[in-house]
Image (cartoon, rainbow, N blue to C red; front, top):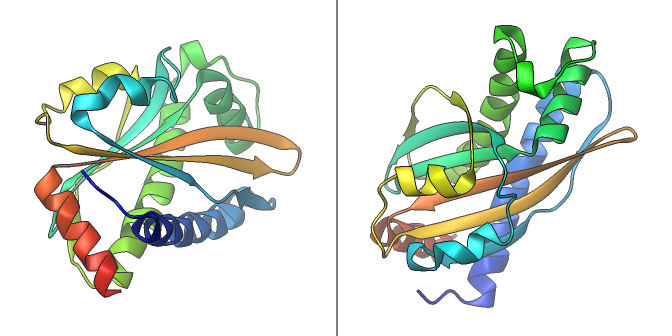
Length: 197
């Protein structure tokens, strides 16, 4: 799977636009300045799954999963380490929480943040590339990235895009990863659409 530096730059900018949109929406909900740093993009083939695990925590993560389909189909994941998820929930609901004991309100809060961020990213990709996408209802899961990626039953030739970004809310630093999963033929459709942009 060959991707040129130009294509990586274009993909980074595309995801960054979506992340910026999501930050603006979170800004209104949280009523505090939200800054999402420019994502660092890494692209892997599924055959090199072990490499991605060097970049993402091996522990159980708080993950919001959003399936999408259209010209390019796949799954988008927003994964938070437990401490980041706990900090974000505390900020959203205004009380201390233990991430090991998330109740439905806390799960709902994280799912909504995931929905905003993932829809911001995928919506921007869809709009800018003029490709129509349909989305499933986002689902909250607590699991390792390793298990989630293997559970997706992707073929060995599938593509994994890892966009690492940090969410800053005033002095609170919250780290999250956006992981996009594509079959390679659909990933190539995305790359061709980027070339025509």
